[in-house]
Amino acid sequence: MSKSHLFYQSDTSRPVLAEARGIYMWDVDGRRYIDGSSGAMVSNIGHSNPNVLEAMRRQMEKSTFGYRLHFETEPGEHLAAKVASLTPEGMEKVFFVSGGSEAVESAIKLARQYAVTVGQRSRWKVISRAPSYHGSTLGALALTGYDPLTRPFEPMMQAMPKVPAPRAYLDGLDIDDPATGAHYAAMLEAKILEEGPESVLAFIHEPVGGASTGALVPPAGYMQAVREICDRHGVLLIHDEVMSGGGRTGLFLGADHWGVAPDIIAISKGFGAGYAPLGAMIAHDRLVDPVLKGGGFMHGHTYAGNPLACAAGLAVLEEIEAGAMMDNAARVGQRLKSRLGDLMQRYSFIGDVRGKGLLLAFEFVSDRRTMAPLPKALNAYHHFVEMAYAEGLIVYSRRTRNGLEGDHILVCPPMITTDEQVEEILEMLTRALDRFEAKVSPALPRSA
Image 1 (cartoon, helix red, strand yellow):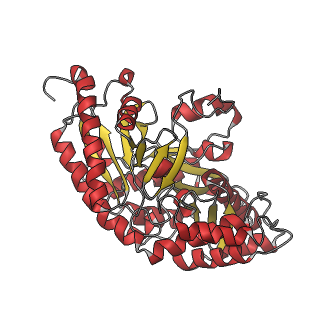
Image 2 (cartoon, rainbow, N blue to C red):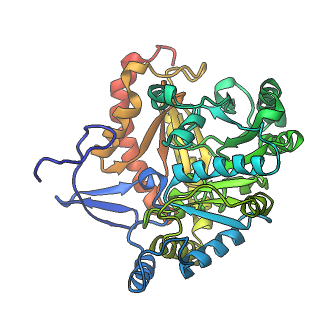
């Protein structure tokens, strides 16, 4: 292929994609890869599902675009009704977007407009966690706690307050002890009081962590305590389910594991499963109704509710239900997590394995006793991805400690993954880890 005119996040070149089916992908030279991260935790139901493709073909024969202010569409209405049936009671209003950043941006703008409508103009601060990632638009980036991504743009953003993410494994606390959950939740309440409750609009967090924290699972009691604190101070609770939503954790929403309902949900990625750009903001009636009656939601996107995207999204949800994929994600995810735990026993530089369902990660350390990270200069998160890629396995990596150090690897294959494919993934991971061990061993303390 001639020189590319495209650019993205780096100048790293990759093979040209020829075909993708199920959990496998092939390049134009015929080499096969396992999509061990579902792209960027997107391809939840696998690639080229024939029923989804057929639903998209049928819609393309009818219409591919209808502007939301001009027409309602059957795919949009049906998908919104389906989403409302899968979310907590009262979350009846759905606003479609094209991706996760748009979903988060929509969520904070709805929260602000609601506050203005009901006479709470002083509320504008949205508290989030550090580390965290909520999107790449300036509004969503202001909520993000990940220094390499935010620092260049700080002069262009309104800084938002942050509280520590509940990383019990780094702080030496018991994740199963409710006192641990209370400890981290108390930091949120302290921040609300420090900022002044009358100025705090919302708190946003991921129920199960995404790329910035590597599938972080909250400690016992945290989710419930956060909900109570927000209620006590009149603060709206926003769940960023862009990565954890859509069934990947074994339930439709990550927060469903704790039975906690937010006021607003942002969802994308696996929601459309890569078949079309699709996301949604889902909000409680009590927020949306006053805004619409007060003059309307002053926000929108050209492709909101695109009929082709909605047809794809509805077909994705139907396939998830018909194939019992959430049950499979829970069962196969437990098997994969257990096998990752076996690797942790084998390799001293794996300091933690965590996650739910098929949203899983392991974190590298130089010393498991202190949880000290590998030396930053090793760029372990980058090199391991390349080593796995050379084995034909695609995984996803980031740095856990505000993006500056603390390397973790996300292993999140599609929800259709079988037990046999788990073993295939583990074989590739093991070969990559053997190569990685040879590289990092000289940098590890002798006592590790």
